[in-house]
Amino acid sequence: MKARTLKKDKVNIITLGCSKNLVDSEVLSGQLLANEIDVVHESGKLDHNIVVVNTCGFIDKAKEESINTILDQVSLKKKGRLDKVYVTGCLSERYRGDLEAEIPEVDAWFGTLELPLILKQFDADYKAELLGERMLSTPKHYAYLKISEGCNRTCGFCAIPLMRGKHVSRSMDDLVTEAESLVKKGVKEVMLIAQELTYYGLDIYKKRALGDLMNRLADVKGLEWIRLHYAYPHKFPLEVLDVMRDRPNICNYLDMPLQHASNNMLQAMRRQITRPEMEDLIAAVREKVPGICLRTTLIAGYPGETLDDVEELKAFLQAQRFDRVGIFSYSHEENTPAYDMEDNIPSAEKERRAQEIMEVQQEISYEKNQEKIGNTYKVIVDKKEAGRYLGRTEFDSVEVDNEVVITTNKKLPIGDFVNVKITKAYDYDLEGEIVE
Image 1 (cartoon, one colour):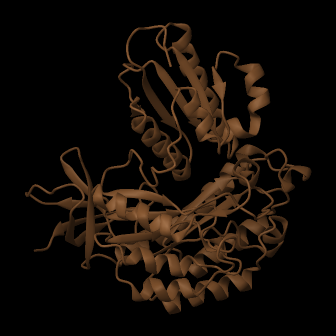
Image 2: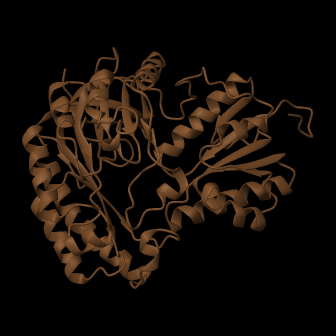
Image 3: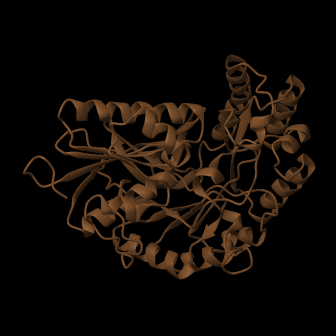
């Protein structure tokens, strides 16, 4: 396409929201590069003339951040610093009509599955043969691998099916090809992501096939860590745990969002599981994979939640002693099943409850980290910051979990694995020294 300047177009992609959005941005970047269009990711240099904002529309805070980012880019366009501003992603998918009216300065809006239409704005062709070709925006030693799109669940609080559609699995052959391509680029760790990993394969293989996929990926030479994110507890395929236990390059780590522990709330949230069933599942997980790291996510302030429900959730955390916990305050989202319920808990009270619940988990996390002192772990070196190397064990995912501060006088290549003996432990981080 011709811009009003005579310079060659340069595109800056800004990504908001989750790792699934990040993968979408990386795929768009790869397509643009294949069409000989210069592209960068979240550049602060302002040496580009076109911006694509890949938005999040999950909860109120994310929507606000997305809108503010769009307005910032529109402001640059008005000042003559940009030629074009395009918007894609979940917020655009969900509110396109309203946004077009409110922010007419945006040149075009696209939904979550409209990559070929975005490329047309650049007179570029969608190249289907570029399977797995992405411009990684993560450090080159790890990457996210999206195994499916969309979700068939109808959880009360969740707007994802409105923005991402029904569950669609990618084929194992395609995923293995992509993993091999990532390894050639230097990737040593992949994090499997989807709206729901455990549903994988039901649409194309007529069975839950996550375990089969894990075995195929574990065979990829050079792939040293495979990590599972976003497993749904209802009808969890326990054979996945056998693969995790038996294959050394699959991390003993499972991210399984439970959302609550009170039966009243689980039913209201349409989670299709009861507290006793969750407790049985957690026991089975820990029996099949001794020492597994369990991460979960919770919601505070769902419509109708009582203080008794909060106390029950705190007691559940104390009993189950998860390794990692994240928590969101409930966001009242249009067209979700919960939207017909009264959002009867003030925002400040939601935040107070979330903080109270996290204080329980903070103490558990501290105690669990103290138990690691004196132990030696395989650690991947992620970065050097303020003169210190920071890494992670197999029990820690990127950005959301513990970091290990590595004490050494040696130069450590980023992405290398080292053995680290833990010498100090805090609420959410560890310190250690290299063991030869």
